[in-house]
Structure formats: structure tokens, C-alpha cells
Image 1 (tube, rainbow, N blue to C red):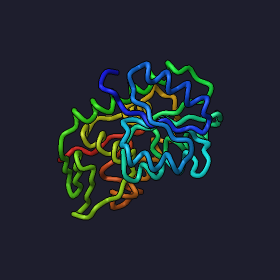
Image 2 (image 1 turned 180 degrees about the vertical axis):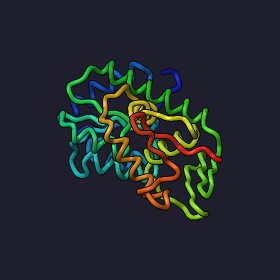
Image 3 (image 1 turned 30 degrees about the vertical axis):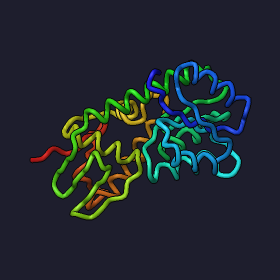
Length: 231
């Protein structure tokens, strides 16, 4: 890439970091390294990378905790790496806000391809979104990443905000779980559809007057979800 997209590469396997750094720099990325969770968290805020490659098993803070802390303040795209293949790790990582997930060993070219795809989708989503959305008492500021309900701030995770913004920006249109995985998590159904249901449930708990009888985020049985249109 010619614009020197900044990558934070986090893994305690120094041989792997060296090899990945070589491949990423060949592709034109600017690469910063971190070898434990605490160093990763510090650099994530100090250098403001464009994308983070984050190993799950790290000394100090593990990858889950690092991802959780980053997502409290930033929406930087994150790809998680792990030697494990259990679905529960994948689902947990994605629910905490990771954008994608790769199991070691993997082909560095596949990592680069996924990184570029995630960065393209992130840029395209930002260009398409309107500045603000208001439906009833719900206000969504897409530039400042703020949500207010009846003039009170609603605290959302980065993925909750992305999901809410996407549905509200396309109010009335029905999206399947697979389509929402593709749009928000940015991969062709590598993940489990349950993570969509979990995020929808959390959103309803935060923005619906009666989460058990939602009036904003509606379930279309057999099809997926949609955001209510203004009457």
C-alpha cells in the first residue's frame, strides 16, 4: 500500500513477528511491534495505528483483555490471531469487538488480503454514513460516535455502535444474520451467527423501553432483523 498504513503487530513469538513484519513491509505497510499485552495497549493509544494484528495468548494482559480495553475508546480494526481453533474463542473475540479471526498457522498473503479488505470496508462505511440519525427519542451522531436516548448518553461498544448505525442508516430494510456478519464484522461468514443475536440483545437492553417487546430493532421471523421506519 502506498500511503503507509500503520499496523500494530502484537505477538510474543518474535520469530513470527519478524516474518510477518517482513511480509507486511513488502506490501507497503508501516509496522510497529509489541510483545506483551501491556505494551500493546500502550502503543495502541500512543501511535494510533490504522489496524491491529493481535495474538490471543500474550504475557501480562491477554488478547481478549487488550481488545476489550481498546474497544472502550477506539474503533481501530482488529484481527485476532491464535493457535487455538475452538469456536468459543472465536465467538468471544468477535463479541469483544475484533473484526476478524485467524488460526495459526496461516498464509501471510491471506492475512494481508483480509487486512486490505477490512480497511476498504471501514473506509467505505465511513463515506456512506450520514452525519446524524434521529428516530423518535433516539439520536445517533455518526461522526462523534455518540448515541443519546431522550437526551441521555447511551454507552455502546464499538461493534454495538456499528451494528446500530448500520441498521438505523438502512431503516426498514431486513438483513439476515449472515448479511450483518458480512457488513459489520467484515468477512464471508467465517463467524457464528449467534454473535449477531448477542449484540442485538445487548442493544435492545440499552435502547428499548421494553427489551422483551422491542419497538426499534425488530425481528423479522425467518429472515433476520430490521430497524423501524419512522411513521
